[in-house]
Image 1: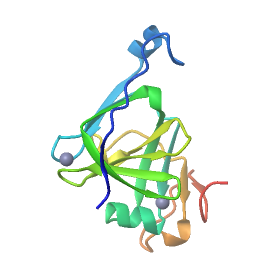
Image 2 (image 1 turned 30 degrees about the vertical axis):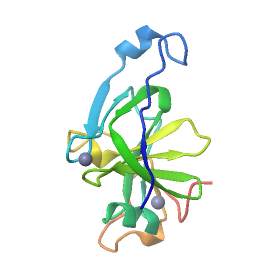
Image 3 (image 1 turned 60 degrees about the vertical axis):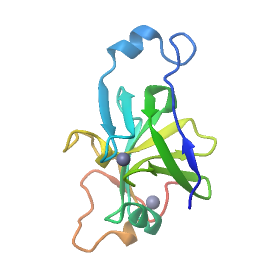
Amino acid sequence: MPATERVVIERTPSGAGSLTGVEARHMRKRTGGCNCGQVRFEVSGEPVRVGFCHCLVCRKETGSLGNFFAVWPSDQVSVTGETGSWRQTTDNRHFCVTCGSSVFGLIDGVNEVEIRVGSFDDAPMDFTLAYELWTPRRERWLDPVDGAEQHVGNRT
Ligand SMILES: [Zn+2]
Ligand SMILES: [Zn+2]
């Protein structure tokens, strides 16, 4: 069993981080959460990058095609609720302890949150896919996405 931990990523108070309070208020907000509603999050502004990973770990995490994710700086993300997590190398994958939905990932030493795009409240979302990872693992009936960088492994 993974250890249960409480993760609350507080938005940086105005003046203390990279954003001023005025900037933060003018940024677009998007919300999401797990299936049961115990874990909720809000992100401000646009993601710094959007990708899709076809690797085996991401397939097993989602039980599906892989991991469609969008990344924000930590100070533009707030999360409430209790998540469990498990860890592979430096990658900590968080899920709701009640319903099991995958919600986000945190990478050691990186001040970013990798939100699972499928956990947003709206579908479909309006993000443009910038890159695909581990393309040899892509399901045969899925085509490469036009305009997205194609990587046979992780980005280097
Ligand atoms: Zn839940
Ligand atoms: Zn992956």
